[in-house]
Image (cartoon, rainbow, N blue to C red; front, top):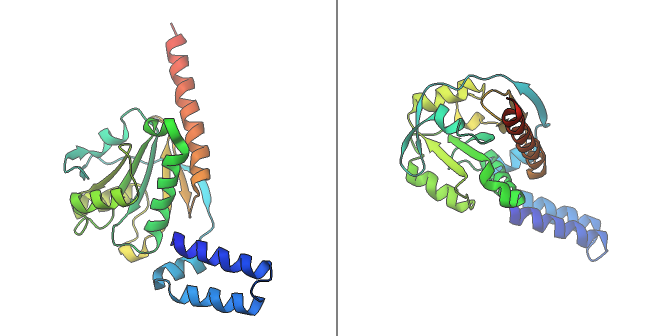
Length: 223
């Protein structure tokens, strides 16, 4: 996907400076689009508008399996003291998931030294196929650090988690991009529908870190 975008940009630049004509650039761009996976092409042509809103969700008391093979409590994983960014993916996805996973990968780089202060959580919506080993390989593909963990489990557990966050769409092919952020267990979730950028998420994270630091200072100052 990244290679395609670079190639498309090069084509447009060549047209702009007159190396190739506008008609040639249109033909080349169309040829590149025709080489795309149909699902990627579909989502590029119908990029949903990004919307942000606050929401209240109750994290279900269920167990998931982390990409290191360990069974864990979902509430415990989300309540480890760090701000959380959560999304839903599956490893064979060719449209939505590569884009959102690449965004999280870029976010890690932008966070720099603060990356370990945030817990990044990706939960599979295809647990029958996504074993811990497959998720570990997927995580490696996107250079996931120790702060970014991937989870699978039973179909029932995955579906219950999706429903708890109003993200269940029945069939994995109906999967839509949505990202959930929360500063602390007693705070509301921020829900971003659509393809949020790494800079969008970075701004949210910076605000969440400031909020947790402010709350911590207030708690220590209270007699």
